[in-house]
Length: 256
Image (cartoon, rainbow, N blue to C red; front, side, top):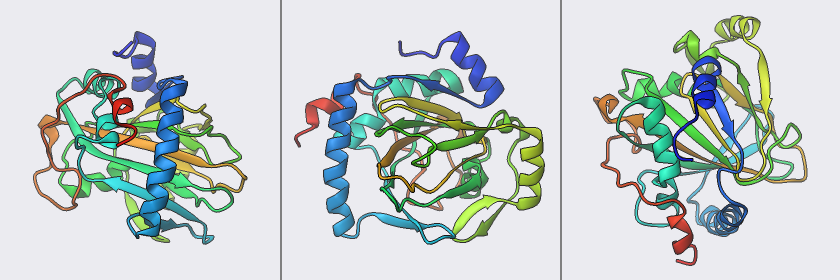
């Protein structure tokens, strides 16, 4: 099923997110994980991976691609399963705003504090919150290894004020306190290959990974073409025409 179900659309509108189990097959996610572990370990050694710290000194690794080319990772971002979901939910043609891998390695992956993605994307020339992200779990993601947490329904608050704190862009504490009073916090535990689709104004965070297991996740974010940035601030996010590919085409390039 490519399009979101009526139930999924209802959850997205009311809660700001929905979870689709087994979005990628076992063979797909196993190959994705194996390929990513090798590629990104090499990138880390060659200083091609960003290192993000939290206030406790724990580190999360981040790999971002500024375009979706004809390669393994570009084909994942352009996979019709992701693209059709984004198009149907946003009700518009879409393009890939960004795609990246967040890597919380055992015993060291840092915490990410409460924020909205649109809280800072807005500053990059975006007027409207017509964006969403699809998070695909490469590993089992649970409370022990720092799974995502969300404030259910907080996307309905609109964009809130954000500040820079401990090298992270986070929601202003005064606004966060009130948001937590109004909305329930939920841990989003996921199995490998599951996908979480969430609104760009949904407040979310994650704890540090203090377990002995990896917690890697791939995040593809999509923007409505009608909402393309009016200025270029970052190397990512500007409009690039996208050519959708068939489901699983990345598997045909797993050895390249």
